[in-house]
Length: 630
Image (cartoon, rainbow, N blue to C red; front, side, top):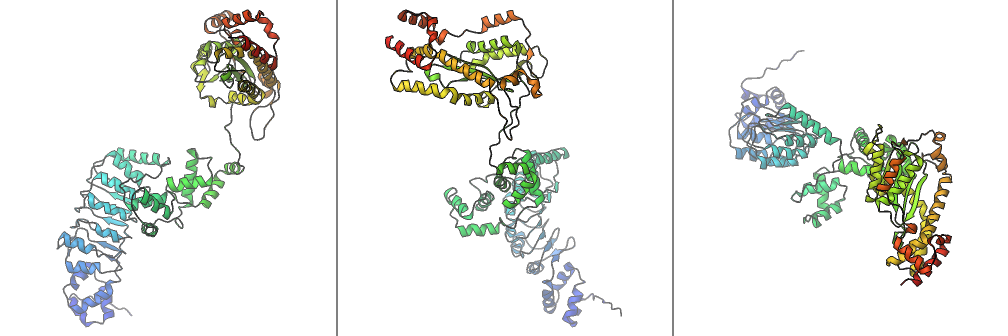
């Protein structure tokens, strides 16, 4: 059986029909026409429509439709309204009354279109917590009113063309819209920095329509955003003039508790807010720590990105902190721990062993790099030490004690003697930036200037911090128990006993005269012992091991080659270099005048003092000399 329903042209005849049939008939009538009719007919039909209007969720009008106060009041009374479109309608009442009626809109509204309306205030947005789409194009909204949109935390679509809002305000406002989809800002002039700020602030920006701006610059802004996305940028401090909501959001993102946030507001910003109020603000701002975790794919991608940026050696707690406070990623510690174990298992295992991971030192063969440095532990007692070690074999090249290790001519003599003996020049010399190495630097660069490898010329000499000169610093650490501790304790005991005054230059000359040959003898013994001892292999340390002398002179046994180069000059050039740029060591580390004075008061030839070869004999000689000196 087929039933047809004919809608009467005269809606007043609906009064004769049952209420159920009236509702059925009204469902076929356009909302705009229905509302217009309801305002014209008797009260009985209005009651029926009021029963029905609670079912309406979408209210739209045809273009250029006339809306009066009665119709607007009926719209705002609908508690189920989800979408309201009033754009381009002929509103018969003023902007003040229209804005006042907008304040009565139900909080259930998600989409609101009020383009080309007499709207001049956005105060109603404060109550629309579910608002996702807003069109205020062509209205008289300005910068002062549009700031209220920062409270619309769910806003996804925004149309703001042909308004009085400036580009700077839009750019600043975009920081609150992390998931903005459409941003329509026609007829507003933008600077390039404004575009960059909008693009970088809206993490999921899908469409940006900006007039009077070239496509090239927009593309450049998007590239700038992706470049910024590859870096870790901490949450920016909102400033001392920020609102309480902004401060609460900032401290919440920094993982502070509600009690701690209240303390910051009181002691830093002079704002008294109770802990319960902080909890209410966090609830209103939808700030949650639990049940708001980011998708796992986003967490994993960000961890991989952080690893590429240098955060590969931190644990899961530090990684969790960076993700939550600096990257805008919400993740639990358990999720980060599991993700790190899957992404970088070796690093997790290494950290669980709680072992210090050192950088691997790479040296390919003998003379690949020679490390030189001075040693000043005995300098308070007038003795200075200078040494050099091969980086590959750990063979000590020279280890000398003298009255100074700061004079570049004395230091250069050691290097020239090494070159003369080996008849080769090393590939690279590494030292600190001290002035005592300037002549060695010049000699090394000059001798390597004729070679054509990638480290020739100026690259053949490397300067850096003394703490980064690894091989020679390692040597000093071994020298301390074998040599330094004994001599330092001996000299300190002499000071405590009143036998030595290290502030007296004459006493320091006597120390060098008596002790320097014995100290050099001890250094030579340590050098020979070190070069002939066997370096053992170490677990989890990838380096060559063996006897330093064997490793230096027989590199083929270790699948290595000698990286030194031929010296491009003859012996006569070396004689000239020695004469012009070096200075011989003083006999027994003392000046010629002091040595002559000692010979006069003792009537002993200088060479006869060489019979002193033990520390105790040197101490006895020192006490004898200081007793007869004025």
